[in-house]
Amino acid sequence: MTSLPERAGRRCHHAIQPLHSAVYFSPALGRELAPYGIDDWHATYFAMRAAPLGAVGAGAVTATFYTFSHAVVARYVPEVWDSASPETVLAARLRAVDATLRGLLGDEAVASPEMAEAARLALRAAEACTRPGRPLYAANADLPVPPVAEAPHLALWHAATLLREHRGDAHIAVLQEAELGPLEAQVSDTAGGRGISPGWALRTRGYNEQDWAAAQKRLAERGLLDGEGRITEEGTALRERLEEETDRLDRAPYAHLGEEGVVRLTELGKGFTRAAVAAGAYPDGLFGKD
Image (cartoon, rainbow, N blue to C red):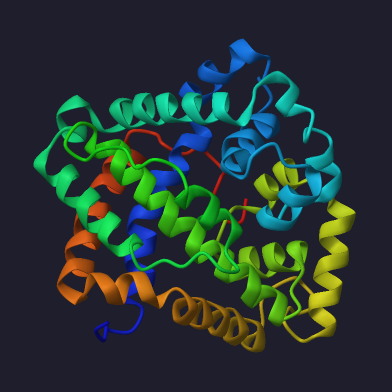
């Protein structure tokens, strides 16, 4: 493996991760799963992201997704598998990815040489990902890889998924080491201007305003937030340490790709991501502080 500039892997991750997550908000996913009776956002999200794990119960989803309350997960899992098997969901999500990326980027872009180049680079990086201790990555790594020659956009999405879950699994370990539970992690993240907005978190993660205020109080007692819910210098420093430790645990794929490859994948990913965002990939109010 080779050395990389500081945060190069993180920048590359941020450049291609939005291409993975855009499908969660795509009408195409709903259209694909609605015929099976899966028409609620939570049910759709849980089914699509958990399907590589198999027909798991609520406990496995709560553990691996981390930021959702167990109560909201248990409302939909494992019942969702009575509507559609994981294999059915996996086929539907790939069709939804195809429709989503074509709709956001256009048929020409998804079949372009640049898309194929990005897919090859991302897949090369993913060669150095490791399974132990990374359940969501490992489950996705067992899935077939879409052929770059026939469907480069699907190959890129698959690789982006591998890289996203590989980093995410590592980040959960880092959060637990710092004793930041699911809600504390989200509250401190949004207070620091990162991640999804508080309103979106409350609407989707299964918590209420009282839960949020209680988490703020716990963080304030640790000196990570002030009395107004704003992040402190100590809180900012902790969040950056968490990202740096996640960078360390997620270093292997980008070191394997090498500096030149990381720079090129970041460049290509940014271009596709900007186009997707401009085309309306994400709903209003998803990011920011509300």
